[in-house]
Length: 80
Length: 266
Ligand SMILES: Cc1ncc(C[n+]2csc(CCOP(=O)(O)OP(=O)(O)O)c2C)c(N)n1
Ligand code: SF4
Ligand code: SF4
Ligand code: SF4
Ligand SMILES: [Mg+2]
Image (cartoon, rainbow over all chains, first blue to last red; front, side, top):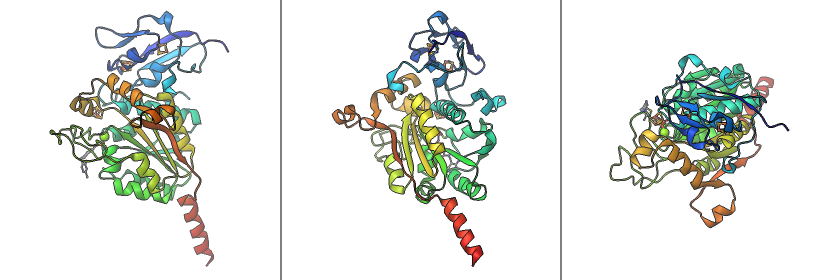
């Protein structure tokens, strides 16, 4: 199967509360918090579209738009 | 359908604290429902009172935000009159097992088809961090400043003993497993209980020096294990995750219908 290709991280700044959960658990360390404590994609080129950030965000504030609609399995074994 | 189609976006951002596990339960539940492909008009969510109970305000299903501890009683009434609807009843640990404990065990015993979700953050979040029947021995809270001497229920053992026909447990850290177990619980015909260990960083986390929401999630990862794992044999203190019971026994509304048919014939 083709690897999904990232198109965009859609982050809703009005909903994000800066908890840092997506930043901490992203397996590729793609995300960071900005000066206003809102998540943003600092290294989007490293994103593997696993959607872990999207599945874990308590505020439904982050969405991964990729070339393939379905998510690749999250790489972290413990999650399954 | 995208999960955003199942929420009332006008009420977001939601009221929960940064990093609160309740939002992660909402996230997992929406994914489970999307995967099963349920129509929003087929679902009724009934909740009681508590931070967790606020969840019913955010989903675009038929919803009822009722009174503390009595969500299952309201859900029972709805299901009896409209058995074709899918009932989902999210409850806090206090809501489900302190004030609502009696409703809980009898709902489990009757095996009416509905899904009870116990969002267990081991504290009364909404009212300021008092201990609950799930806090456990030795925990700190605003009402146990010298440490709690009450022992905790085990939600899984209690539900099994009370007769629930589906019993599962997971944590907010295990996002995929959460969506998977919730999906199976919703599909299951009978009374399903899913315990989701969840974090209240504001009260339980702070009082027990467990760190941030992230630290609490790491704690769920480290202190739980799949049912029957080797790790559990080595370390009996690990809490097991997975589906403990999944059995087919007569469902209450089906049985009630048969009684009506018998009575009408006489
Ligand atoms: C009849 C009644 N008794 C007490 C209360 C006060 N009260 C509101 S929420 C709550 C407990 C909330 O704890 P829990 O169910 O664990 O939910 P959480 O806030 O932790 O999600 C209590 C005792 C109430 N609202 N109604
Ligand atoms: S997990 Fe969600 S709310 Fe928390 S920092 Fe990331 S985007 Fe913001
Ligand atoms: S999709 Fe995966 S790799 Fe990409 S930002 Fe989210 S968690 Fe990181
Ligand atoms: S008080 Fe606790 S349970 Fe309530 S919203 Fe805040 S973190 Fe969540
Ligand atoms: Mg609670």
